[in-house]
Every structure is written in C-alpha cells, then in structure tokens.
Length: 445
Image: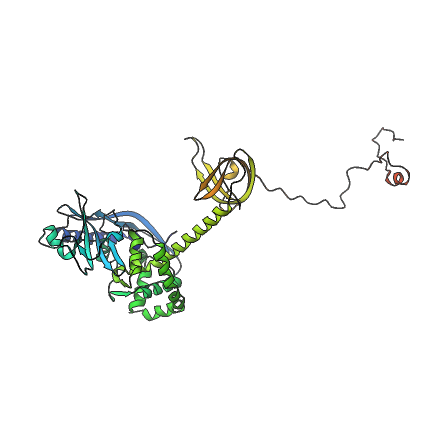
C-alpha cells in the first residue's frame, strides 16, 4: 500500500473525524462560508462525510477500532462577475506553486504561469502572490495581482478567495509558527533523517494521535518543546541524510516530468533555495517521492532486461511444454454470462513468458510464486509492456512424478532363470536350473 500523504498529493483528501468533530468542523465551514458571502464570495464549500472506521494499536499494544467519518472538502470554485477563480499562484525561488480552491478540477501547467505579471494593470513586478481567473463564457484565462482584484472585478471590497490549504488551516489542520522559510537542503536532510528514524507518517495520521513527518521536521528545524530530544534521536541518521539530500534533489528534478499538479509543484519547490512554511509538507514529501521514483526506475530496468532476454516459445499451432514460476494468478469472467470464472495465469519461464486462461480445476489453487510445468498449444505471440508473451490454449498441468523407492537386495525374485538351449558344456552346467513343475505336470526331460 502506498503511504503517500494525500494532503500533499491530492486536492481531494480525506480526514477521519468522529461525530462531534464533524459537527464542529461543519460549524466552522459555515462561518467561513458566511464571511465569504458577505464579501462577495459566490462559490461554496461543502463537507462530504462517509461513515468509516480506523484500527490502530494503543500505547499498551491492544488493538483499538474507532468509528467515525471519512470527510472530504468539495464545492464549487468562487465566481465574480462571470469570472471563475482557478488557482492562487505563489512565486517562489524555483518558479511558481499553484494552489486550487475546493471543487476545482482543472490543472494549469506551472510552466505556463508568468510570475509577477498582472494582466489587469499590465505591469510586472516582484509579486509574491497572484490569482488565475477564467471567464465562464469565453474561457479566457487571466493572471491578476491581488492588489488589482478590486479594480478588475468592480467590487468595493476585496473578494474572499479560499484555497484547499487555507480551508485546512482555518480548520486547524496545519500548525503555525516558526520562520517564514527554511533552506531546501536542511529540509531534505531532516526529512530523510526523520523517515529513516521513524518511517513516513502522513499528515492525516495526526487525527489518530500520530505525529506527521512534516511536523517532526518543523520541530527539528525551529526548535521548541521536545526539540532537543528529537534531535538526539535524529543525530545517528543525519550524516547519511546530509550526503543523500543533494542526490535526492537531483534525481527528482530529473525524474519529475509532469508539467502540472503535484509533481510540477514539488519540482518548483526543489528548484528554489528556500521552502516557505506553507510549502513545508510538499517539500518533506520529496523523500517518499524519491523512493517511488527509484522503485519505478528499478522496475523499468527489470522490464528492459526482460525485454532483451525473453523470446517467444515455439510456433503458432505447436504444442510446447514450459516450466517456470507463476507471476500472475487472477480470476476473470467466463466467456458467457453463465460461464464459471476462469483463471488467468502468467508464468515466468526464464527465457520465455507463458500466458493462459483456463477453467481447469488445477488452476484455481495456484498462487503467485508457485512452480508450474504446463503443456499447451501456442495460440499466439503477443507483447505486454514490451515483453514478449507466448499465449497457450488448452493448457495441462504436469504433476511431479512420485519418488520410487529402490528395490532392496533381499527382495525375492518372482521368476526362475531358464537355461538357454544354445548354452552347452560348462556354461550350460553353471546356468541350468529346473523350473518347478505345476502339479500334475511331468517334469521336462
């Protein structure tokens, strides 16, 4: 299971709240909504709650199950005079970071944003924050400085523009305090050391009393109550983390290729020299992003090696026997509505990969990792992810031959040797035996 923090990778993320927390959160959202409406906010923010449960170990090691609700932020982006708010744009050293409002589904390529420019006053200056708006009728997208919004929209007051992270901050999902920014290398170093010492803990785990990795790094960087003890725990891992962090940064900047969304935002932060407090969780998630990147690269290397070594087995129509290890064993629908489920098998045979679908009884108990020898007729030669596969039809499993115990020397013979008529002389004398006659039969002369 992937333990990546949804708060840093997905704008639609779940909280786990009990009934009292859900009621209090809805009350907070209602106040935010009322304040926004008074200032011209025409969108809406909603909480979608689904009953759910969570299990964890208590401090004494006993299993505990909590019942509550999975809660997500939904809604509609704000609109003013036909203009829909698309994203808040933060200018950072590495480029731009885009933050979206609840209910927004569109993403904008980070490289399409011109940091510091305003399409209303047509000036470019050192703006740390601007807003992207799109017209509902024409689809035109403009970038407007915060200070120009009142003039651009024709409102007497500055409209309220809430992003997902601002809503979470208002609901207490983020802690505050500390300096405005930290050095990127320091953030990655402490993040790598924290993951090595304690493992990765997503921000959503704070709802269960666990300390998110983001907050561990914040405490290590800023100090405060418990910081000295924490730094002592991180100390054994800091030397290796210090050496790794530049490579983590280099690998991610080369491997994050998406021009929008999470990857684009993370790359933007990593290209800069400083990490702002509101982007700390994003920067800390670089450690798990790097782990996924390395794992993906390893799988791709394995795939390329398999592509180079694996070839087709036999020719179409030929019967072949292959031996290997089951890599895929899954149930699939039958040919018709009433047909029983079949089993799809993919078998790694070293220099060949066999693929087959069968309803034979022997296939259902098979699991990934089981050895298998099978005979079938080659139906087709196909490819999957660049790896050649030999498709077999009418496959039959070969059961291993039972071991036969050797005959003991003392086992009595069930027959007698009869002298060959061709033997004579001494050889005949040595090899002559007489067959025991059956009752009533005269012995041979």
